[in-house]
Image 1 (cartoon, one colour):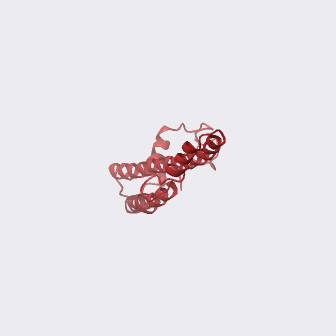
Image 2 (image 1 turned 90 degrees about the horizontal axis):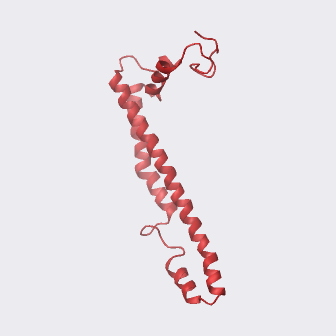
Image 3 (image 1 turned 90 degrees about the vertical axis):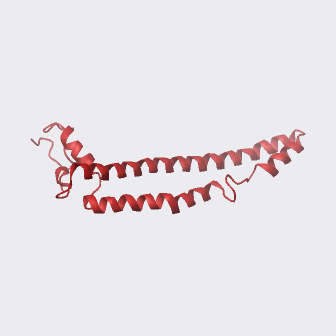
Length: 145
């Protein structure tokens, strides 16, 4: 299928744009999810770094501070009853899964399940025919006209 053949028959510009906006929103959620994984890894790293701090405090006569950190901070939940991995699991199983399902439903109903119809049409409008760096797809002849 060439880029220009992605739009299903009868799909208006507005419908293609709406489906594109839903997909774009999912892409934003993908980025947010990545930040959630950063939060998870950074939180875990900080928790492990406290082990060194506690050892240094204990070895240098500050056992009370070391005990305070060990008791109140190391291993602490980031939200009630949850470590950061559980936050990700809840996010994935709830909001993220629902968002993916809604985006797929919109694409199925409006663009025949085709992805990136709006972007494919934009590419067709913006590329320079015949230019070797502007081919429609990786398999196209670079001398197309």
